[in-house]
Image 1 (tube, rainbow, N blue to C red):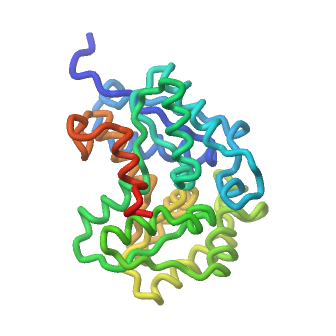
Image 2 (image 1 turned 90 degrees about the vertical axis):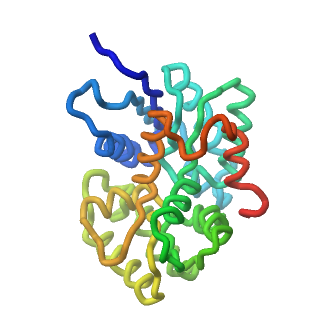
Length: 276
């Protein structure tokens, strides 16, 4: 007979891209102390990439279809499958233009699961664990870069945010992720030499700007750096932080006690006017 406290079931909305969802689940496994199968946390990964519009394409106006509707529908499916706490395996989905619609759709569907906010958790992780950091860099998609949720939260916490200019962002960092030939999304399970070179160039930029720490603000970057073991500058992997936060939530050890603040208030806090 299996006994012990019942943990909350983690649900992962994958497919953004597919490898990033798998990587998040692997991170949850890696961060769970377990001596047997039964010691691991319950988790459900739902990867339906064909149903979710590209997040950056929507934010940049290249499609009018907001991916929030498909994401919210998957969150509801995860709830029906037994999930209690949800991680969205894509940083760009937390842009207010997408994330706020997800919350609205969940409310209309009477969906009561908790979504853990990756950008908020990542910035809080830095604030709690890196007391001497002043200048924080960000590598992310064009969507995350342009719509600034990381920048807003970091500045509210008192950090100087280091970002490349628009040309460098598009031609180096975003290209590393999205290029249809050598980008990370186009080469699941494989890292191209060109992507490696672009990563090295990006890290070189942040080093030249005397950046104290760099956030990997795209779950695809997590896959790339993990495969290569690049550590020329301290890196904070937002996907790893999300995995840690999901583990805590599953074990009912959330950083904000549930009795003090409900889910809707928590995510309004993340994108409240003072952050934006």
